[in-house]
Amino acid sequence: MADPIQANPISTRSPVTAPAVAPQAPAAPGVAPLEVAFAIKGFSLWYGANQALYNVAIDIPARSVTAIIGPSGCGKSTFLRALNRMHELTPGTRIAGDLRLFGEDLYAPGIDPTVVRRRVGMVFQKSNPFPTMSIAENVLVGLRLNGVNDRVFLRERLEQALRMAALWDEVKDHLSRPGISLSGGQQQRLCIARALAVQPEVLLMDEPCSSLDPLATAKIEELINDLRSSYTVIIVTHNMQQAARCSNRTAFFYLGKLVEYDQTRTIFMNPSNPQTEAYVSGRFG
Amino acid sequence: MASPSGDPASRVATKAPPSSGARWPDISFRWLALLAALTTAALIVLVGWELYRGSRQAIAQFGLNFLGSSAWDPVTDKYGAWPFIYGTLVSSLIALVIAVPLGVAAALYLTEMAPLQLRQPIVTIIEMLAAVPSVIFGLWGIFVLIPWLRDHLFVWLKHTLGFLPLFQGPIYGVSMLAGGIIIAIMILPIITSVSREILRSVPDLQREAAYALGATHWEVIRIAVLSYARRGLFGAAVLGLGRALGETMAVTMVIGNRPVISASLFAPSYTLASVIANEFTEATTDMYLNALFELGLVLLVVTILVNIVAQLMLRTLSGGASGKVN
Image (cartoon, rainbow over all chains, first blue to last red; front, side, top):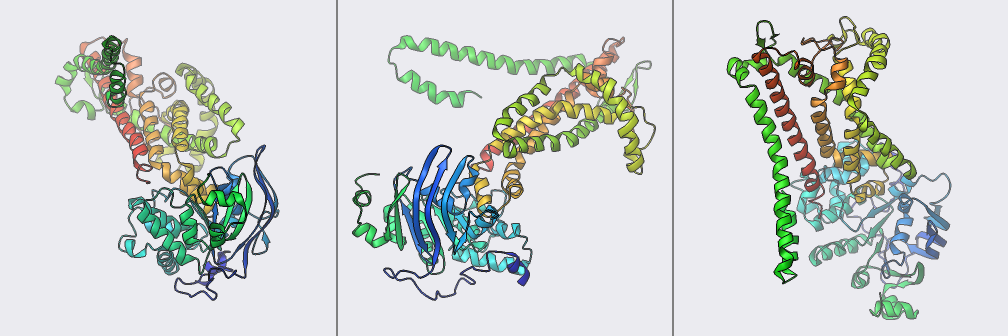
């Protein structure tokens, strides 16, 4: 059992070992968490000749939820995808600047993007379970890719990931059913479990509730709330109530620039930038 | 078949302009189109009927024995279809074994790996392969492929895999295996282009799901692309089989045209399509002609069944895997 963990580069620094572990420092709102997960300076990104991000500088704290808001096309999804180098799947992209995760430059030469993506997991707008795989296979596919075969270990991880994704009680009796037999909201939580099973250091969520009904949305928000004490979560959302409800800090992007970044309460109650105020009060966007 | 999709649109169109003058071209065009659709459907029924009419004597004489019998003797007027059915099935299977991996691999390269500016030229070249007349492949088979197989590949196969009954016996060149290889080349374009369409229909979100887990390019292809597309790829293979069964000209030029059943792939064989093409002019007796008609009927039925299976598989793909996500 020690071997697969060692072989898995994620676990060495993973903040979570068991679902029930209490966080050492529950980040009370208003108290800045100590450790910085992402330290980003002067980060720009181009799609061909079009610049999508301008000189973004931001420090994203560990073990908290950071929301990214902004109108469509403001670069928030692009920014999120740059955090685990997913944007590189689009041909013709180029970046400049400095982007570090726990001090390590993710864009340094010699850094393998597949390793970055194992450390920084991602959940997408639409749930995308693998249709030919069962619920259990979907959750464990990332570990299997890493060569983990220990059945006891996989079984533990399966339960742990599904519990963290608040799905265990609903699926524990039919883990071998196809993943796509679940409802939309359950599928999205299955995708969250799949991302959590490899124990990434950070979980990125790209509008994870945009295709879900309010009830399923509430479940996911609750789950994000539970994750915040032990995980670094970065969530892009169109829904300002959602950002207000479940994040510690909020970043407002507009036209590819980071306009304002502060405690969520400050952004919504007392923003310092007039553009932020206009956006959060619903006057544009 | 066209009406369910055409209906709502035409209802909207007929409701929108209140004047009845705009309606009659609509209606008459609809009937005309229906007539055209029915004509196409009627043709296949007509072909089947004519084949049945032409083979009635043989059907009455031999009954179901015709399918299982190995006799093919115009002198005594005894006929059986089994060696031809066997030759057709085996040569087509050989073709699939060769063409499916090649076609799917080519399609994978074209959808997942090839540089964008290279994709269209390659697709065009592969489609040109489909435009080469069958007889050209046959000529190439006789003058290039057969000598090479006889002097090199077959010798090597016999030497290394000779312990298998498949690769024993005398080598003539013209053979079941040569027929299979020629068919493989001819069905490669259809398998490649259908597979390519299937792979292109795999949602990018599936690929991203795998990439986000830290999968390498090959792992993404394996867990996200191929497994998603597997049913459709199977459909592409069955569609290829449908083509393979009916290939005539090139096959008859290289397969040896002898109605024998041998375990060895080096032995000559004969297919349903090639025996019909070869012996039609020599069919002097009524029963001979009837037997050839019946072979045609068998070929038609088998080909139609295979194509129906292929269409069903390709159709369930679009509604099956992706439809339930959401």
